[in-house]
Amino acid sequence: MMYMKRFLLFLLVFLFAYCLLAVLPAFGQASESGSPVYLLRMERGTRAENVCVLVRGDGLFHLERTAPNRSRIYEGSFPASSMQELQQMLDAGELQKLSQDQISVELVSEDLDQVLLAIRRPDQWQKLSFPTAKTRKPFRNSLEPLIKWLDRVKQQPQEMRNATPNRCMPPPETTAGQTVQTAEKQPPANPYVMRLVVDYMSTQTLSRNGAPTPTAATAIDEKMERTCVVIYKSGRYRLEKSKQEFGGKMRAEVFRDSLSEAQLQELQGILDAPELRNLHHPTAGAGVTVREGETTDLFIPRGAEIQRLMFATYFGARTQGLGMRDQTRINVDEEVQLLRPLRKWLKQNVEERKVPPAKDAPATNCAVAIQPE
Image (cartoon, rainbow, N blue to C red; front, side, top):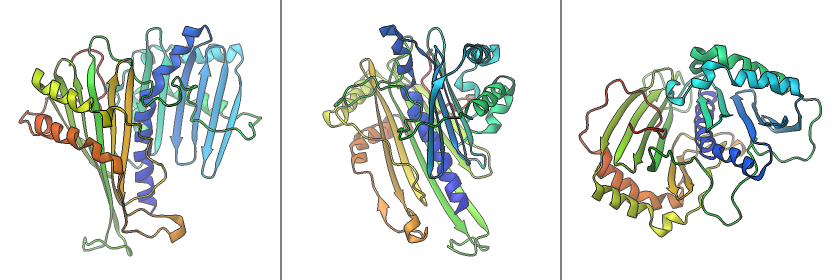
C-alpha cells in the first residue's frame, strides 16, 4: 500500500506540473492595468507537506502549507531587504540561463520532492519543473538558496482563518462561462497546433513465485508509460515514448518528422469539431489510489488562448471506508470518447510511421519549443 500511494502521489505531482505550466503566463498580464506584476511562484511538494508561495513585485505574498488533513494560509508583505535578497537569488546567472530541456526527466521515483518555479523575466516567464531532488543536483548552487529561502518564509506567525486555498495561483483572467483558459502563449517563431500527453500506470504486488497476490507480498512491480506528441503549424512534430519501472532508469525514444499540408488540414478539422472545441473538462480528481489507470492531458491553441482538457480512467480504486481493499470497479471518464477521432488520427499519421528514433535527443515531455526543431 505504501508503494502504491507513493507511485500515485508522484504521478499526481506530474499532472499538476502540466496544469501549472499551462496557466502561469497569465501572471504577467497584471502590468497592463498598471498594478504591480507578480515576480515569483514557487512550490515544493514532499511526502510531509506541500508548500507554495506567490510573490508580487511590491513584496505582497500569498503562502500555503498543505499537510494531510490540514491547510494553512498566510498573506502579508516582505520587507524591502527580503525582496532584494530574493531578487539577487533569482538573478543568479546559472538560474537565468536554465531551461526545462536541461533538466532530466523521470516518470517514477522513490524520491517525492518536486520543486516548481515560475520566475518573471523581462520578456517572458521562465518556468521550471524539477521532479526529484536528484534532478536538482546539477544546479544546486542556484537552487539551494531558493529552497532554504522557502523553508524560512514558510514559518509565518499569523495564519489566516477561514481562508480558501488556491495553490498560490493568481486571480483568474477568464470570465464565467468561458470554455477555454488563459495558457501558454504561442511561440511567435514556432506556433503549434496541439500537444497531447498520455500516461499509463500500473501497480502489481508479486509473490515469491511471481504470481499476483494480495497478501504475503515480497515485491512491488510499478510501471509507468508516457506517450506525448506536439505538432507545429509548420508540419514538424515531436513524438516521445517513455517507460520506467520503479527503481529503474527511464527509457525514452524521440521521433521527429514532418506532416503534409493535407494531414495538417485533416487534423485541424478534428480539433475544430464543435463537441471538442466547446468542451470544458475539469481537472481529474486527486487523491485516488488505483491499481491501474490512464490520464490524458490535451492542449489546443484557440486564438490568443489555449484550451486545456484533462481526462482520467482508472481501475481497482481503493477507499479508506472499505479498509483500503482492492475494488474491481472501473471508473471511466465518459467524455474521453470525444478524443477517439484525434487518437485514431495520431495513430495512423504519427505513431505508426516508420521513423527511426532521433539520436542524442533527450526527452522533454514534448514541451513546446520556442524555435523550430
